[in-house]
View (cartoon, rainbow, N blue to C red):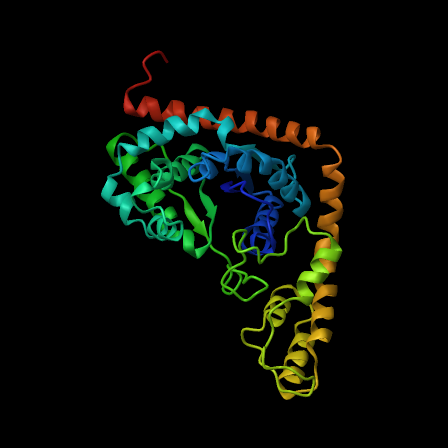
Length: 335
């Protein structure tokens, strides 16, 4: 049995980038009887750089949960839970911090990059600085053997593996060494509709799972294509053309997409036609999700109850691991 831990920060609704990068994979993993899936809404991690705007985090917990349910994550098959409701994770983080030097955290490429991107400078919150250690606690608390991550998160996973090795050699062989599950080549990062890097909440260049059909249609029609493809008869470029990038990912008829590419490159195919085709392709993909999301959104109290049940279940697992950790460390005094 493979135990899998994955999750998202609740700082906004999830978009197609999340769907391609992780949510679709989670759904497949969930449906495999050999897997046990834990899916965490990482509100504690989100607060590391949103401590002074907590409403941004708490208000999006329900939104992320609805997105999970929309893509088909099933509380009967997966454990959906909220990070802050598992106090054992914070205690485990504290024990792990004693095994990691400040220099090692500072050298983590992902942390360095994100600190630069957020312009923290010397004002970086301590919680944000040490969140790789917190992630290690999240993974190991559930004995996670597989962790679906993007390539940019590989350094985080490596730090978890180092912590597991350090703990097991310092104390006892208690923790499981996790392995990463990476997206297929070319599927890990979906560019924004403006062609600007990856799809991002902060850049407002995403198509969200919660978007209405009308909203999606308008976003597709505004997509970046080839700025030099002014007239239908003009030869157009496929590389860097977001419509074709999205068709490569979502269209099922790959042969037809290749035909469109040739026609576009030779001239004689307008942007409007390929955009309308992409609208149809995305509508087929998103309509079932949209319907499920709308149905669950009718009863938010029920959704929160599902998260409460999942959190209670997750806490029992984390408490068992913490008990083993404290015993290995020799501090389980009243066991």
